[in-house]
Amino acid sequence: MKKVLCALLIGATTVSGAGAFTGVSSWAEPAVNQAMTMGIVPESLQNTQAGKAISRAEFCEVAVQLYESISGKTAPTNIISPFTDTDNQMIAAASALGIVNGRGDGTFAPYDTITRQEFCVMLCNVLRAVDVKSDTIETSTISVFPDGDLVANWAKEDVQTIINNEIMTGILENGQTLLKPLETTSREQAMVMAVRFASNYGEVQNDGENEPEEKPEVTPEVTPEQPEINENEQDNNSQSVYIIKPEEAASLTKDERLMILFGKTEIGFVTREEAEAAMTEITVPVWRLKSDGSKMAGQMTLEVNQCLSLVYQAIFEDIFNGSEQFPIKDGGSYAWRSNTRSEHRWGTAVDLNWNENMECYIDEAGNITEITTGSHWLPNEDPYSIPAGGDVVKAFAKYGFAWGGDAWKSKRDYMHFSYFGT
Image (cartoon, rainbow, N blue to C red; front, top):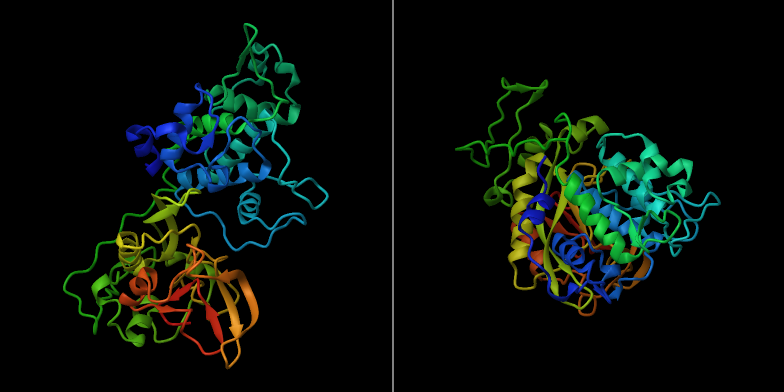
């Protein structure tokens, strides 16, 4: 499965001055530049001291970005934090993926540092989350390092995997190459190893189980009034899928939308298995906001209803090409929920930048009575807040989507765009 990372590694250009950090060592600057170009440097690390130890929270952001880049999947979102000392969504996502664990007392200790052997274990946890199997080598080869006996038993196999793949090569000191497994990992060391890690695993090696489906061809000569669904053409005992064309998406009636998406004039999927069989993954262009206020091009992967895959592509391309260059840091579509009326359960809704585009209830005068998700909506102050009448709202409206920012009388959901208006 070829990923964007591979292309970036082959064709990357140097970012002048290693702008992600300050005080970058000369030996680390090429890798830091590469990491910036690849888009695996979290915003929280930009303009920080390169030689300082990376924290557990900072590593979670790096790990989640590596997971998404290598797997091509979107990390879990909107997760209730399992820890008592942080509600950081990157930490929650890394925990849900099995990349990191807590301290055993209900805390995560987000500001604690990470030893080099812990870093190896966490990188291997990323591989396990992606379901990549690495070649194993006798752990005794760690003994080539004079301090190899300091590696803890619980970390030996993963340290060896990382050494075997030349992701960690040791530190030259007084004529000796040392492993230093108990020392902290600096931010620049983390970036060097992250780039090597991405280079090794940028193309997932598997038996095809995780290969993305080919983009379904749009059935030609189909009018909105009578979409063609070939009931005789079977694929895994299911009907062939009609992919809605972007130019017809807004003109379809509700019943036509229901028939295309669900094969009936009733809303929704009955079971989770039925819903997931109707989803596909797409990768769309987005703008990322850097800490200095400038923007850089990036990508985002979403799991969406397959029938709307081309429509979603068109929407995000319109947003990306808009004059605002609206930055997107969070995005999600399909998520199985117990609420049978949730369009996320159907893959027909998208939420963007949820903290900065709150969901809330309002009274008859328009005053906020309760905030249920996110913290605020300040389109004239926060660049992540979606402006009414801006590029994002216009793009979704163009293709027949309603915006939760003005769709209902008693509620505002500024992050939410939906094809059925719910």
